Image (cartoon, rainbow, N blue to C red; front, side, top):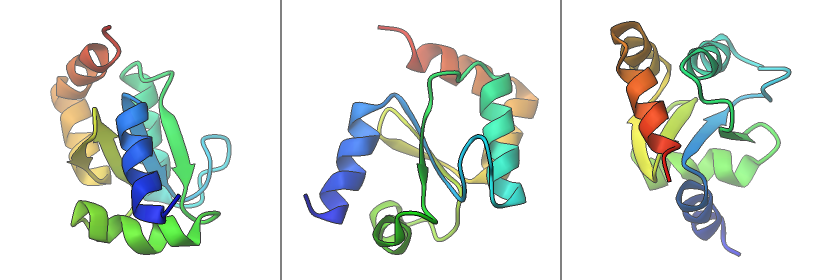
Length: 106
């Protein structure tokens, strides 16, 4: 599977995907850590994460796919939500909690 197809498959297969630096257990950048913590606090306990440090092809090509240059990148139902700043703004406004709850509804 080509890298662009894999990215597309990941964001279509999982309701919530966070492309981040590091893992949920060991985030390797402050922005990824903050976005992850906001998602978990918002109830995204089943989110799918991709460690772009272990996936150099995804790290190189995801910005082309999403037209977003930095990491982390949050996708919900295949749609790019944004990076850390947008995730934090949504969390602080209470909107992220609503979006996450809707994402997990059948």
